[in-house]
Image 1 (cartoon, one colour):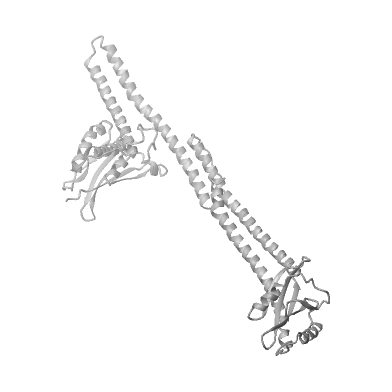
Image 2 (image 1 turned 90 degrees about the vertical axis):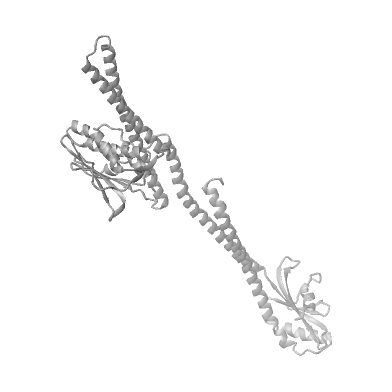
Length: 476
């Protein structure tokens, strides 16, 4: 039981509380006992002060004279109802009692012996008589002018009633202590359950999620940190469900993307194989080989994209950085895609700046991959007769540390709901256009590896603007 939160709480908190309450209860019991005993002794001391007036300046050396004086004191003693007063001779034998009854000579009177030895000639004793009665006694020794003990007066009061009151008060204190412990256990158990129950639910939910059940929900009971944790867990389950769905869609898209070129390659290969038995005209041969080469390149691009994504996910992508003329790299990519834009009836506009821009320190092939991906997406989502404009900006006065490459299209645009997610892995805003959905995520990761940024602005029916920001190379 001590392995869980409840056990640790009991060991770390309840044991301390039990110890503290036990110490407080014990202290109170001792305090009550001390106060009651002190009150009894104070009462006896107050009564015994009468002896100062009775025997003040007592000089008689005769024990008979002392007995007579003591007899008069006992006869006139006004507290006979509360206590018993005894007169003892110099040897400690009882010669007179206020009750008039004989006293057991065998009873010990340690207070008399202590009083004879003490400096103030008085001593208290608390104990039990042979009859079983609990008493407190005070003995005061009377001495003559020579300092010789001629007798003593002993006061005896029953403490049974006091002890009963002590027991009652101690019992009340113990019951209060137990009630406090019970209340602590009750409130503590409620508090621990408020933590353990949601945590157990989180554990069960995590197990269900681990087995692929993302639809499970956690009931939020408290508006506190535990409640926030439940909300976060529920949101995480929703995100995992969405990610799982995107992953499945991604697998389906990739399968389709792979199947389409493979089908074309296989179809033309079979056609050329069958036609090879007879003479194949050059036009058909060139067309078939063109399709095979084009679709093979498309397959290669998909596989490379998947490999890049895998490298990024596992942190194995390594940049081969060098000093680059970014305008030259961008110009080469635009030259590669210009024929495609013409064939698709789209306008690819780029005016190379006349100024000389500072170099960039980066991986030539990876940056080209980013340019190809961004411009390819712009062409892909731009309708026929649409425009894709590319602009490079650098201002050594306002932003001397960065070069901006801005790609703007007049395509269908991205909805506000999809815009924050388009750079996420597996996410694809427009399912009608071919693509795996990871190209933009890979491009964003490559830009981050170059300590740059990839920002997207878009409006539905207006078009999209992608801004690439690359830091310039610091000389020295």
